[in-house]
Picture 1 (cartoon, rainbow, N blue to C red):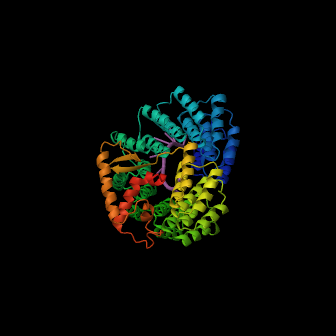
Picture 2: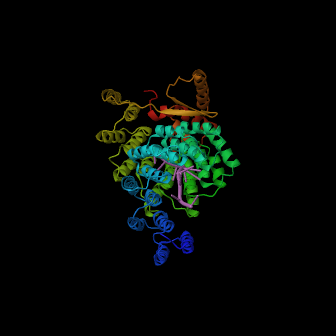
Picture 3: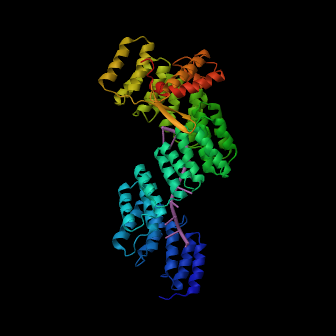
Length: 538
DNA sequence: CTAGGGTTAG
């Protein structure tokens, strides 16, 4: 077929600047008038626009595709790519299947990339494996981009080990490939591995960019690797990446999770902000018990014109709960749905139950559970049970336990909690009942663990852990710290009150000397598993 | 000249 080159080129230029469907259809009419509807570059360009562009139309792309007699690889790629990024990625896989079975055009690197994207999004592990086979058979197994797609696809399907194998077998790895491996580990929760990848990549001269830092920082937040985080902060600063919102947000979150709220604030002040930035600040202050600050940032966010979502409220309510700001918490809880159109989830109810519970308003807490759509979930009852323990309330404690029992959700921690309540009431029979319950039902305890970062290494440990070579020295130091804290007013078993500095009868004035606060944080960290399982003295 | 990698809750 012969086409008029000058006209075809003119139309192609116009097509490149096209940004909406109505205009495209006008150009298309022009194409037909000039007999260019079968010009390969033009028909591909039109199809690609409809399939891929945000202002295109996938149904229309499908319609066009149907009328192509022998679709070439590029046409298949357009339609597969379009569906891979659409709300229904399965369709991309249907087209891929049809391409392999019906078409003479074979898949290329683009086909595999787009198909893998679809597999990743719909979690089609079987298909991913099958595509992997085709990739190897067709000789694309050494392509960096295709392999990066495989790494992501396996990673997103919960197969981090296989992702790692694909990664290790790549003949050459560029920065994007390294970043994909890091974020794969980070998102799968293999934080130590993510950080270790960074050590390997520094030897390879591929450099570091914002993507690298975001993945690594996210892992630092999760394992509390503050020293490492600070090191990454310095790199971000050197590379001029502090005004990158993704990097900034990851830094804010890292500092906040590690308890360095000043550090979080410093980053926050020097960058453009989005919803993530505000949420990280609110949640950061909230989970560390700074309710006033959480409220302050919440209000600032509203002033900045950012609409709060459910996470913002989670941080806010958590802060109110931990600081004992009951009135404020209740007010925000109501405003959630009435003013901001955010539906409270189970965790928001959990905050409110916890808030009333800590404040000693156990009947109110019970009422909230009754009014919530989550009476069939053990979580709220368990919060009520631990509130009952704080306030030594046998009646409500037993109600909570009865509900847990009816749900078949009783665990060892629950029994310990109720037993502690009985102990406060000198109810020997009650204690014995709980002891028996644990024994008879064979309810297992999962040991809690904690961690501490020494230079760049994060050490994990459990209760009574003696596995560390320096364990003798460690326990000696712990003894020393505990002694100092006790001298300053720390009471064993009451650390959660000291930690939050308010809302308890023992420390009702809320005035806690700063060194006690620091020690309490250390003790809280070191005894975290003990406190959470409530095993002390059991 | 159509590819691949990013943050908050749990």
